[in-house]
Length: 388
Image (cartoon, rainbow, N blue to C red; front, top):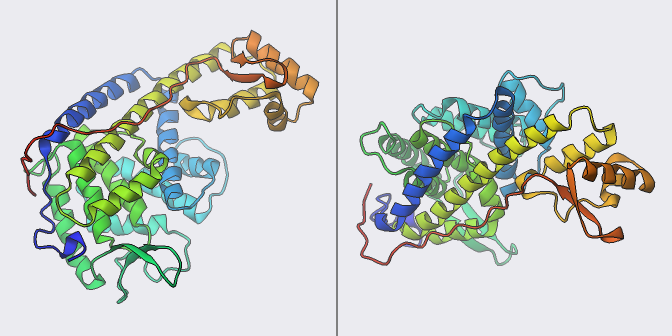
């Protein structure tokens, strides 16, 4: 039997809880720190955080699947659906659909998971697609659902999902498990453990013709939010996109056994890194608001455009630093004007210059916060093997 769903213990996953204990504690503490930080934001900053966080996850979750969306269109769609002021930009179906998913997830995180919601989410993420036979319902194709790579004459099968005939039964069981293991379900699991298993469990069923990855990551986000008791806005998809190769390798390694300690340790590292990334973005947002308030009325239109472009890169900064050439490309300024504008931005303490002459690069004066990788190894001991 090659795949985990073909084995006698499916879906009774087992794992070493002791190896995850410290990660669970750290995630719980981080959730409290994040909540405390957000409380210090003003209404406008909190609104910006929500839109930025949801649009980031929408874009990155789609990017993992190779779909590149327009950031401004996604943000505009999110703002409209939240009833916030926005522009009149028209989003494409794919951008509108993933935005709808993020807003629906944000609004309904506390409620039980339902099959109707999952079907609705899948319909959202494939919105506008005309090449699919099934949208808003489970796959029904008689052919095997496989994840493959390589040439057509010698494909490598990374995973094969249960046959379509089994999907309705498997999904009914999955939804019952998800709700039973939630904070109010009577068999509550720790936050990261539940989110990690939920994502793996769903991906192993692979119930849809397309959109499984995006829906699966939304399920993991819902699990984390339910455990926290509020929308977490965790940069889960953004972190998985940074670790995309490892993400696929970890999923592939986990689909052959129902002992999932290795997968959960990997997922816990991702969850902690995502939490740190979110905290860095909140701190950056606070610093950004203070900077813009201090510089209000002091910048010309070119300087403001370039500064906002740099700030859009978030807490890890403008890759390689801003050069005079970059500034000219962003603003349309002549070389001489670019040099004067940049010198003025340095004088106003908006930017800091590194290097000289043609090697000069400019960085934001506010603190940048690069987020490092988090690995969860755990102590070597006999597994306690909790089962679900």
